[in-house]
Length: 144
Image 1 (cartoon, rainbow, N blue to C red):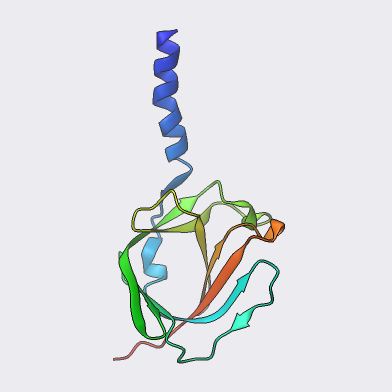
Image 2: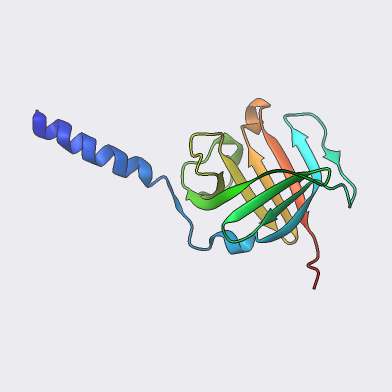
């Protein structure tokens, strides 16, 4: 019996650690300066934002800065991980999905990214039960 418990104690953490692993393609895909263009929560119609609204996210290879109305609100570190067990918003999409984890907080609500051209979307929650949210950002041109 002790052997069985020992095996369970070794296998269980290994099993769960495999569901979210660091992604190799990672952060280079989202590096840059992004400005908010649209938000949607649950079944409420989307809200759009004009260019120059000051709600931005700035990503380097490992750090982020979040601005609201042009003022720095939060900064820290992030990682992108491959999530093979996504939350229900992703039903119908293929796993693995890319999850962003801010400040090493794996226990918070899962937030997934979707990159399409110059648009970067952050999705969380469960749209199927009217509890999802989405924010879409547009990449700003780099200044040289």
